[in-house]
Amino acid sequence: MPRSMQRLVPLLFCAILAAATSPCLAQNRANGELIAKTWCAGCHDIDGISPPFGRSDAIPSFPAVANMSSTTAASLRVFLSTPHARMPDYNLTQREIADVSEYILSLKK
Image (cartoon, rainbow, N blue to C red; front, side, top):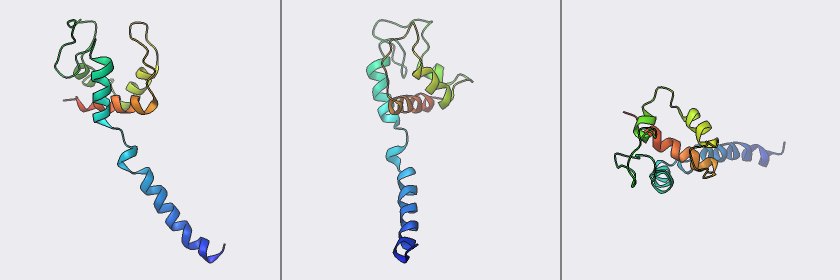
């Protein structure tokens, strides 16, 4: 390997590592909250505020979901990626699902 390439490899590795650990690639809780308040608050109690048409016991609040023992980032990702008959299918992107999941998990007490 040419000497110039030998110097470039460590720099390239550092650049990739920095990009992979960059905050811009992490879940964005604020964006998840915005998505939840835009798309989910019509039916779910998001953060102690009841939906505009009242609360149904059949529809869990986000804090209740966050505090279920089965709730993890992975379980939320699977749930939000799968269409459900009683929920609208908003076709969230993987980034949006990660953001909403992060927001829901932030409500855990």
